[in-house]
Length: 168
Image (cartoon, rainbow, N blue to C red; front, side, top):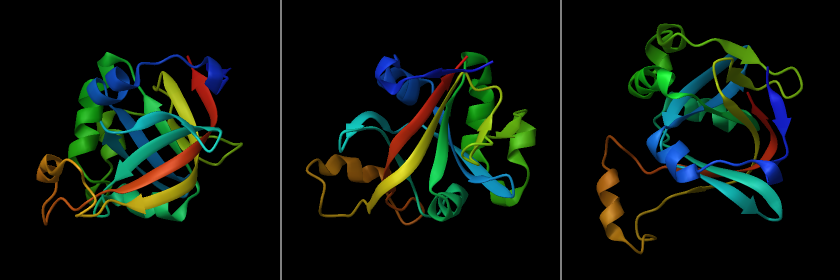
């Protein structure tokens, strides 16, 4: 059973949880959604609101869903689910039911209409406030450009307000 956590009381090491353990970004609703694994992102405060930042390439299937929906979720899992997150990062939802293959159980939150997974240890509900496309010529450290190519286009950055946080 989840407990609601006030964002000011939420304790998590974002560098460890996002960078090392990964998370799922899920956008859409019960009529259509997709999820993707992420290892980039940030949690903090923006415009005096608790905020989350995520990055999605325009060629990812999840991009279509986050563009159409204002609310999305960030789901964190225990170490036992790392193989599922790995699979969800390698396969596209365009090509089949990767969520069932990963063994996760999707759930629709009645209040927000957003999708999350019952196996998640932490679920953060986020509402989009801002987006911006990363662009060549704006990087102070050009070594990061090695992350991009014709098949790996530059990400769109989304900053969203954290609406609520659930923890098991």
